[in-house]
Image (cartoon, rainbow, N blue to C red):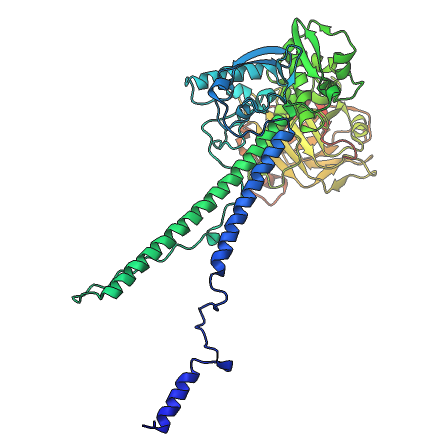
Length: 615
């Protein structure tokens, strides 16, 4: 029976809807071509194999680095028999004995790695075959005692007490755990078990994680019995979904584990870097040990440490040329200086004034200075003058005050007295001279002026961020910033802190003096002005009351008088003056910076450079 034309056309149209050119059947747009099916599975397997290969490579590189340092490369934990061993140590000249299990008690710490037994062949040894470590002896003996208590479960942690947290040999001890998470504000300690990982290593971002599989759709429930074939298909679909979900969970777990593996690797790299300076260098000349006797106690260094400041330096000669018997100085001070030199060599950095300050600890300043001079460190260069008004504590206070919101443009303040913070001018007991001060500060900037008020012993300071120089006969206004501080108050007015800021510096010329408001002339007195030589923020130096005859600005006259006022209210000096009373359209109230009055005499004045010339 022949079909009708319309039926034939419909069949042809239907056929054309599923067959493309050349007779090939078209695929749905979301279906891969037959030649590509399975490629993603193969690619996933290949990618997993690459991950395994990369992780094995990282492990091999870590083992190779350890072996290059003289270690065994054995990543297993030390045996129980080895942990029972007593380790004989020479700590920079002093003998210490400890059980290996105590030294390894803080799992994951640098100390545990160092004494795990893997580096026993890499240690320097003294003539009695004791392990030699270039570490400050008191801190190591303290640490051995603490880990003994930790192993015996007599303490949960090893912490530095506040007096030792700024003591360099303790604070910079190398036996810490780089993978330890420390509490906010917690000082870096040798270790703080139990440790938790917190290294800033990359983790997979949420967008990179696999999407969770879709939840299985529930099978519709109705009164009709499911067809056996349909029921089988539903069970098969649920099994596939469960398998996919399990696979994706494993992938997510793998990503987490790989991230942790990278963290562990980075932490182990840091541990290896920390212990490397304590091991043999491979240079027999540098690794040889030399000792001196300080008041009956041996102080030992490697020849490399002894010569680290120069083959013919005073420090080297103390160990290699001079009489090795030293008496009359505390051994602790010598050990501190030796530890400072050893740590600078380990870091590969020059010794700074801050290093010398930190190494002092609780040592007596005069005794510590004497030992510094004995071993080639000019104490005044590194610690500043012993009789100086400015101290490192003052600089630290000023740095802290400059972090307050009211300080919009904080000045550069070094952390300690000593190079480059050096005293360049000190007034005589009778006062200071303008020409002498100008000559002393020539070529230096920024500058710090510090002075003591004669009647009250208050201590004030000014930081001037530019040079102090006279450029002509007339007074001038320079675009130079300055900051005022009160470093020490009195019992009745104990305020200490930031006083104020000025973006302009007023200077006298050789013939014309600078002028400023005289707040001592506040009502009921008529307003007046005073003349001065130098007017930074809040203070006027070399003041002369208006109308008082005096020599020109370039005089060699001895000066003592100063004038000070600030907007800071906590001064509570009892001195108040309104700017409006002096013709200024402002309701601001000024307060005296000294309880001695708006004007006062200086008992002492010093000037410090904050940066070396040309620096």
